[in-house]
Length: 104
Image 1 (spheres, rainbow, N blue to C red):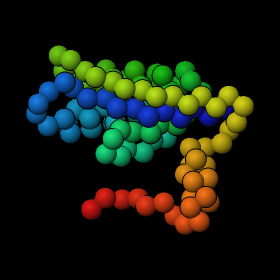
Image 2: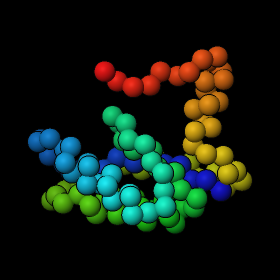
Image 3: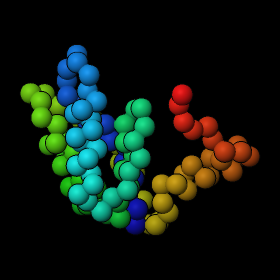
C-alpha cells in the first residue's frame, strides 16, 4: 500500500512564512516518509496511513505560532504499491515528453 498526500502547513501571519515552513518540512525527517517540497506545498509519501498522519501531526506541531493553518489532501491507494512518481510518469507518457519542472 502507498499513501500519498499534499501537505501545506503555515502560520497565519503577514510576515514571511519561510522559517516556519522550513520547521514543518524538517519535522518530516523524523519519519519513514519521502517528500518533495514545491511552491504550493509538500508532497509526502508513506507506506501506510498511520505513518503519514504521524508525520503530518509533527509538521503541524513544529510551527510555533499563535495560529497555524494546515491543508492535507490524501490519496490512500490501498490496492497498490505504486509510488507517487508513477503518477508523474503516467502523465509524461500521455504527453510524449517530460513534464516541465523547476522554476527560475
